Length: 195
Image: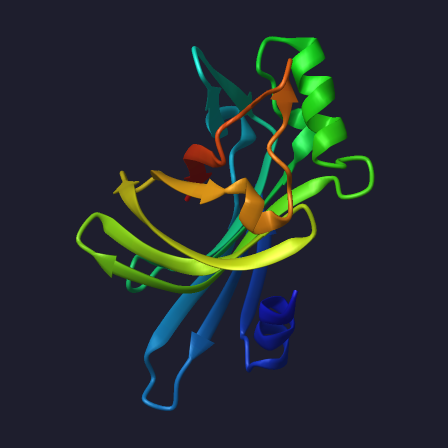
């Protein structure tokens, strides 16, 4: 929201909202034009999957209900900022009992979302070095990861993976019959944006 306020307070000449794109056109004193767009993720082509395990058992849970927004510089063809929010209850591990237990352990009724907001994105070819803050279970921690970017002019997709320790977010690893899950959660994501 602060980014949007900054854009609205700047000397924008043109603002367009169409199909999930908010576009701002800026003209500098030197006459150069920069087009900055806020683009929402295409939920039909986006997903985030977690992997958890305990001795002799591993499972995945996937959410396709991804709310994400990028600030995209059309001149440099670069993502300048990203924000992502996912409802914990939207993850499906193909086991309703396990999903209900996950909601209970993560207190998802009280703290329903996991969010990420970038603080810095550095582009090196098709690779992005992303730095930002992950808020999970009401605890905010700085994280960094590498992602791959594919831009085919009409669609921009970003994919990657990273790991977190659930105890870093004040969560006790859930257990079944006294056997606790591992502390490490592996996350992988693929998010698409229509340019």
